[in-house]
Every structure is written in structure tokens, then in C-alpha cells.
Amino acid sequence: MRLTHEILRLRTKHPFIIARGGSADFPTVWVRVTDKDGVEGWGEAAPSRYYAETPETVVAALGAYAPVLADADPFAIEETEAALLTALKGNPSTRAAISTALHDLVGKKLGVPVWKLWGLSPALAPRTSFTIGIASDDELRRRIAEAAQYPILKIKLGTDRDEQIIRVVREAAPDKVIRVDANTAWTPKRALQMIPLLAKLGVEFVEQPLPADDLRGLKFVRDRSALPIIADESCLVAADVPRLAGVVDGINLKLAKCGSLAEALRIIRVARAHQLRVMCGCMVESSIGITAASHFASLLDDADLDGAALLSNDPFTGATIDAGVIRLADGPGFGLSRRAG
Ligand code: MG
Image (cartoon, rainbow, N blue to C red):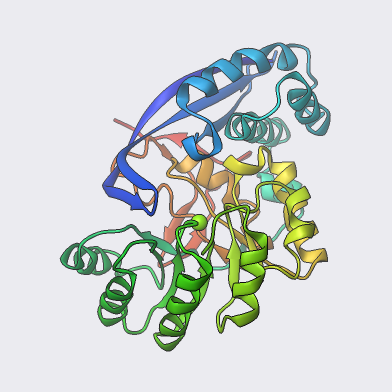
């Protein structure tokens, strides 16, 4: 199989700001795997500096992974994914892109959608949330009005005015389900200050209140929290899950963190075995990455698959979101197309 790539210049409709900063420009890498019959599978790497990846590292890693794919059997995905990891460790979003492309390719070769290969039932997927980044009060109100179609909002916190943000949000969205994500910004003391207010305002859960490696702190907060605590930055791969059991209430997996669709499914199974709540999130990414995760969304308790919905220039079509309901595209593989124009 042949591996080709193209850097995509994705832009968000609004600057996407979280506790550690933000931007409106999110380059990702479109990865294509073509087999000897000319069948093409698509994937996307959404690199995050926080996880030590940039478009440049993705391109360099693709160079290291190309020889693995050269002689690989397109159907032997488990073997290929293991060989990628042996060829070059790290680079999870790059490996996830190849994994996505291989699943798309196999689906196309067999003429079936990937969810069907997995034996899943897309209608069981939870509704997705829509994320509102850090912004001024007026801007928050505007964005909440713009997000009218979404029944679940995820609000980014981790500022010195979190109380004000959450009050403004609740006032502007009195009836919506609201979740918050502090993206590692709080101390245990700050978390325990915030959580009673969040609970009073009917917030559903709190994502990653503390630094990724502060598992003792997470357990301390969780033991005193009225709201469920979900680990995101603390949970990258399935091997991270067992030590989070009893520490948090759930985990948020992402393809760009775990490195493959097989690993995503493994995280879900391991988290279930430990009776953890299972959520899947995303980076800012196009409909390629979002559609891949949408195909296993029926295995989740909570979905946060709004990465493409945040964009002003999504180059692709695939899964869509209708009032929070994830609708998969028809067609084999992931049913992806390039948007016209
Ligand atoms: Mg998060």
C-alpha cells in the first residue's frame, strides 16, 4: 500500500480558546492509503502540541511508517498497527490517521460501512455536546445563541473568572445539559471551591479539573465532589485505565491520543470492565476524524464529537450532527467525500 498526505489548513468559526491557550488555525494532515487495486482509504491526523505532535512531526512520522505499509496486507489491521508502533513509538495522531485510513479502505473493499464490520448499532449513540471556548461574557452569549440547535453544551473553564463564565452560560442556556472542562487548570482547592457552584447550576460533570499526573489529587476531589469527574488528559491509552478506576468516574478517549481505532475500542472495553463512564472527544479536526470516531459512538455514554462543527472550512463530508444527534453517511468505509468547491 502507498501512503500519501496533504496538510489541511482548518479554521474555526471563532477563536477556540481553552485554559492553556488557543487559536483559530488548526492544521491537520489528510492521510491516504492506496492499495494495489487503487482503492483508497482516508484518515486524518489532528496533532496537538500538548501531546508532542505538530504537522511537521506527523509528516516526518509518515515517512517512517510508509515502509511498514508498503508490503502490508490491508486486512491485517491489528498486525499493521502493531508494526507501526514497533517502527516508531509516539505520534499517536499520525498512527490514528493510518488506522482510520486502513479501516476506511477495508470497508470500501468489502462494500460495507465500518460500524457494520464492528457489529454496532449507530442508532444507540448518545447525542454529542457542542463546545464553547473561553470568551468574554457578551461573546459567550452570542455563541450560545448560535449553538441553539445543540441540546448539550461543553463549557471550557480554567480562568480566574470561572464563576462568572458558568453563571453567564446558565443564564443564557437555562434548559440545556451543561458539562465543564477545566483542561488541567485547577488545584484541588480550586476544584472544591468550584464544584458546589457547578452542582447548584445543574452542571452534569467536570472534565479534567487537575493536572494529568495528579491522580492523588483527582481521587481527593472525586471523593468530595457532588459531580462526576471525567479524566481526559490523564487517560491516553487502555493501559492508563486501570489506575484511574476508583480515582475518577469516567474517561474521555480521543483517537489523537490513543493512536488507533483498535486502541479506542480497547479503552472502551477496559473502562467498561472497570465500571467507568465512557466518553469520546476529539481535537479540532475535519469530518474525516470526527466520522471515524462517530462509527463507534454507540459504545459511548457521552460524545463530544463537535470538532468539525466548530470549523468554517471543513473540506469533507461524512457524519453530520442534527440537534446533537450523530448521523452517519451512507456508503462503504466511513462514507467520506470531498466537499465540492
Ligand atoms: Mg477535555
